[in-house]
Length: 341
Image 1: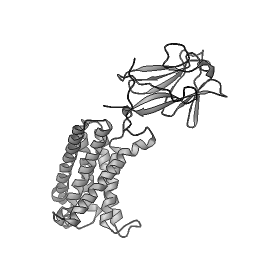
Image 2: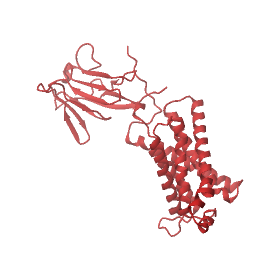
Image 3: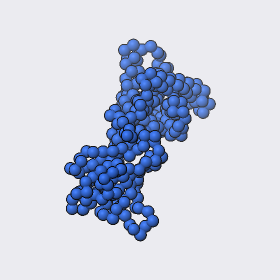
Image 4: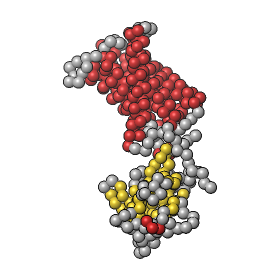
């Protein structure tokens, strides 16, 4: 008996909202980092005003990098000790690089890029200026992507660097616009402006750097009609290879049996998965066979004039209407979380 892939109930459902899940986690981590820095600065300050920007940037970058790494490790069901080591390591790498990058800009690169008068303004820690601070946000964003890259073994290098750069630029712009008193959305409050910049930084990085991959999900076929309602079978092979599943009422050997009284033929449709985890369906009978999805309806009936059955690529939520159009048997293709443990 073939063992079915387990379902991980802790993973996020396969809907369009899954693309924003890591973004929300990173944005939340960034907001907590802002609150942590603010709490220390107000309640028990342990640094001078010259270090305000460095502490804020470093803590923000470390929190976002660690949150991104922790999100992946949790979704892949890594052991707790590995999650902790990867999270701390990612946060430490990005945080130290961000600290070095901040001072490199303000003490080395910045003075080289500006004249003497501008360099004096650059060194003023209380000056709120996008001209002098944007580069610091940009460097911080790029460095936020390096920590997670180490533990992802360089996978998605350009995505991480690009996501970090975009996050830094948008965060810097948000921080400046919200804090600028003459802006129509300006809050005239640098505390809230830094909070807005932190949320934008984390949300942008989480959205663009690493998204939940499809290989954390597996395809299933589920009966929707009253007959055998809720019965389902996995499409994916346990070894991740090519697999084809057959649906019909042939007495023996089929993967998903449906009664002939419901208008289903012996071999009605088959659903297969490739090594690249692409799902495809084929119609195997002359009887009515349709695939219904949003704004689309596909006729998959077998055409005897063709050398091979008609085939279509599947997406989660596609429904098959088998048998007489007046009262068809409905089977649905869905993507469910796969246990990675």
